[in-house]
Length: 166
Image (cartoon, rainbow, N blue to C red; front, top):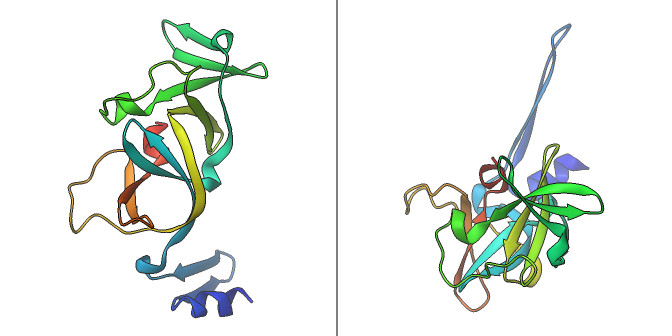
């Protein structure tokens, strides 16, 4: 059952019901055990993790799929759907990243009903990662949700898709 799974993670579940008003279900999980499936990507020399739940697909766009509009910025034409491009190296102020989307990769993400393409240099891996909260150690950086320690001991920042897509 769901209750057993939550308790196995050292969490708990509370259910409060009010007749005629509704039911509140509260799940509590320790943050140290927050695990997500992540797509590990490289932008310039920096390694990032994208929550896989937000990823729809990855592709290398052809030059004719890249559209530039004055009011809407850059869009990628994916099967007739024009999706805004987010240049992660510009948003996160990184050097050495691919500038041309047709030479890099775009990761199509969905946040709610909105889709965006994120330009990356390379997809490295896909794996479960443990989320470490940065609040106690670092100033809040827009676009960064947390961090994870990679197998080689390096740190990969977990991208906050909702902030980057806003």
